[in-house]
Length: 415
Image 1 (cartoon, rainbow, N blue to C red):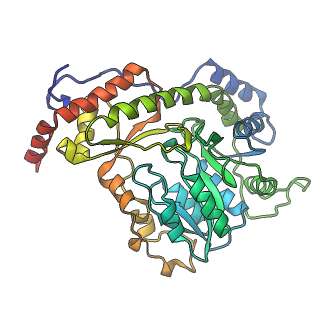
Image 2 (image 1 turned 135 degrees about the vertical axis):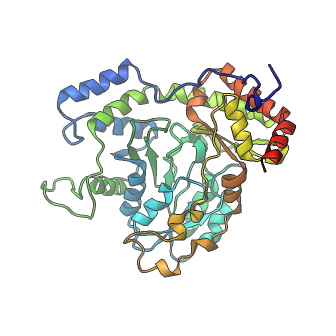
Image 3 (image 1 turned 90 degrees about the vertical axis):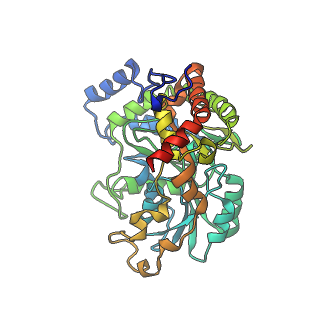
């Protein structure tokens, strides 16, 4: 293999593509076609969504599953069902997709941002403890990249302070914490089935719980405020129609059939990559604590010390792309730095407390470091590849590291 970086005209490590996503086969077509031909396309008339709810809940050891239109709505419904009141505070990590926090705002509650642990990319329990005030009512741990958060510490904090724990498991399909499925650990769990997720129907979400009263409230809110035994046009709480369609339910049922095998493949590749990449100076794969008994590898996450590569993260990303390795730096901002929160662009929400909120004063240095300098993502579909595919990833990182002097020189000339 040539040592000249592909970025500078050398032969790339690979030219063939990694596995594509989503994966579609005849079983998916048969399920969706069956639902289509049934003429029962809406959740209330059909059987596909109900079947998926039962299967997904059982997979998590939960009594209830409430499927909804997306994983943002599922978070908001869960907060509403838990009885949070206007302007209650909810602790969320600064390093996550915005929906974790905007769902809080849309429940008319105040997101309180805390920093992450630099090694695991998950919320730091010490930061959570420090953020609690008399107004705090809930914590939303995000199992980032598919690795469960430190639920031992977070559950202990929640118990001491009487807080509701809502797991954001949008990345964690098939993951487990101490052999307990992610999403079943707190009061309830929220999952997403958006296009990039490890289990997908293009869009969708679900809430899982074993709390009967919480499940009943979630089910009512997702169905226009209706209650069992009530008449059709009788609505008990502010809500809407957040039901999943039967076509999506059918697709999720067939996709669920292969989730276990896919999760096992991703997990094996994740362990292999972590060991190999950790041997390269300047690379720090996501640390895996002992409580993570299964990682779903929605992302393969690592930190990069750009100084060890002689150039900025962006230059390293460009070099890896040229070698045939698709990768990204991830989020550009921690959430409190997003214009949405800096400008308090909350629409009609939080009107009575907006003046006292100042997210420019929130300091989350680890999240800033990951966003701006060190974070590097490999997508879950890549983790479905072969061992040869993983070796190509390693070879590309090794090659870019070996070519660090050329990369540094190129970056210096560009300035």
